[in-house]
Amino acid sequence: MKVLLTPEESESIFHDALCNSLAYIENGYDLRLTYFTGHYEQAVKTLRGGQGGAPQFPDTAICYEDVLMQILRQGHQLNLMDLEGDESKSITLQDVHERVQETDMRHLMDAINETGDAITGDVILQQVFFQEVIFG
Image (cartoon, rainbow, N blue to C red; front, side):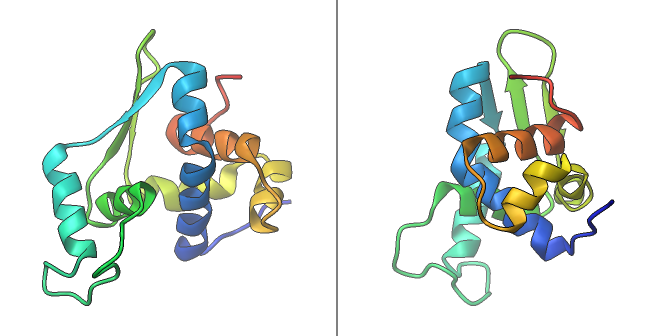
């Protein structure tokens, strides 16, 4: 069986995985998420409405994961750097759209049904960045 997700569904599941598991995979596997600082600042400005669009977060704190998603939506990359080896990878929003739905069915269904946990997010993040589970 194969699950086909819309781009919006893939983005939502990936966002949730970032929220639930980014710290888990960074601390557990000695990986670091990196991005160009200028892209981060540009994403924050866009989310605050500084690029001519309607502000999504005009007067509230912006969550780190929202900024990461905005970096991708603006056409930039996120990089997951392996501090101990050679497993570093970069992704774009297109990778999110294509790879989330390739996650192992058990974990993908947990994410879709909103019953996932840090392990679910870990598997999704690895699938998107590495196209397979290679850590843990």
